Length: 88
View 1 (cartoon, rainbow, N blue to C red):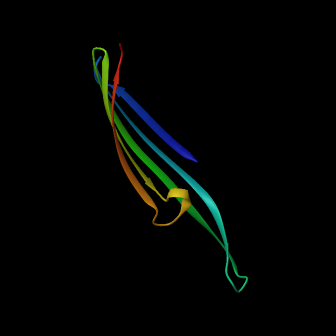
View 2 (cartoon, rainbow, N blue to C red; view 1 turned 45 degrees about the vertical axis):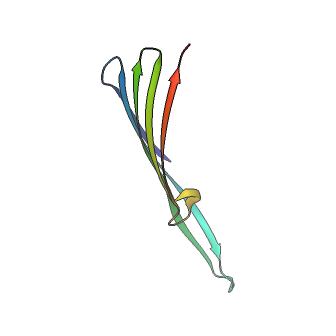
């Protein structure tokens, strides 16, 4: 597994972070003719987050892409999350 993350505070209110992770699994398959094959499959995750602090509230957005979900070929996911946190 390899991972890299970086975060940067632009100013007191704005912060940005990026992440990247790669994981490799050794997958074994056996066919109906008892032929065993082994392959390496990668799972890759990339994300970026931005957060802005407005007094007692934080507005944030994050986007993540996952290639090779569960180490399956062609299983890709992309999601975006918006959040609002408030302090009372």
